[in-house]
Image (tube, helix red, strand yellow):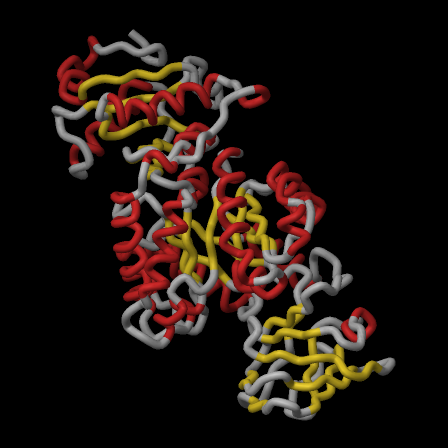
Length: 483
């Protein structure tokens, strides 16, 4: 494993050949994101098939559009000048022109008021409503800008009354279910009901797909506690969030959400503009490098690349850069700044307690690796929450759980088919760690497992020397081993 922090990379159907995906995977990419705003079912299939040719370890995440508003397509990029007047209508079928910007939400005009600000393409184009009519707005352009097809539209302070799921979202969710994707990242989550709307569809189809809630508006920030109760993980989507919320508040919100996710032992992704300059330049800015490192110092599980890998000029270099910066940040982060993960009250369970002790052992006893066999991935996720320095080697009974753990910090998940011999399972893991150079015979390892078989939960922690265990062979006994 090149680094503990996981990398999510956005891949477009316009650039998704097997060699390209393979190069990003070898550079450190763990999860592929499919952006449903820019792709159709044929494109999804092409990317998914090529990912699976490269490796069964790469997890696949698809965004929903959610309750978002976008401009419609343009024949060519449109230049706007400050003080120009432009008409705005809500018609998803109408092309956007210099004279009339059309947006995807039919009732957009009704929700707007005179004096409201409108930010298009993450704020690159700013408009102000100066006149309102039954079927259109007249807006004044506030800055020189260029507008191209299907760009985001934000109206800070205005509640857009869109349903949580569009019909296109529903079709895409069914595609995810039929094609065994791993994660659905739901855009513009405002409350826990938005998450439950997707979970209901998944439950109807008995789908194990996990939901990542994208936090990108003030409602999502305000309701983060109830959202965390029902979601698998969180994505801090700083693009739209930085438009909906004053930009100076974003670092504090990011830090607060990461802390809550770590305390709840749920994966958290920091996304948007992490290496934005590398869309057009081969080297990052110093500020971008610091941004990546700070997200890791804050204790995020994963980082995400968007345009950098979807359509940028230097996609491979972007992943390589993120890997290098992550590796260095992990070396230099201070233990004194670790987030204390409580294991009290409702969370006072055996798994939490043993996971915390296993991570402590990596610091106190210089344990080189922590091994756990995993039915649901829960123990591995708990180990990830404590953000130890040792790799967590999770032996998974099915491939889906292996891919689910692609979002968890410091976890190297491997698939091994279920066998009745728990000794063989454990010994295979030790031999694989030795073969890959992650441990030597002289190293100490920790092993977390359960006495009650498949899915019974973690009940014991064993810490021992690799060579001593392997030399003992059948004389080495643990609660799960049979004579």
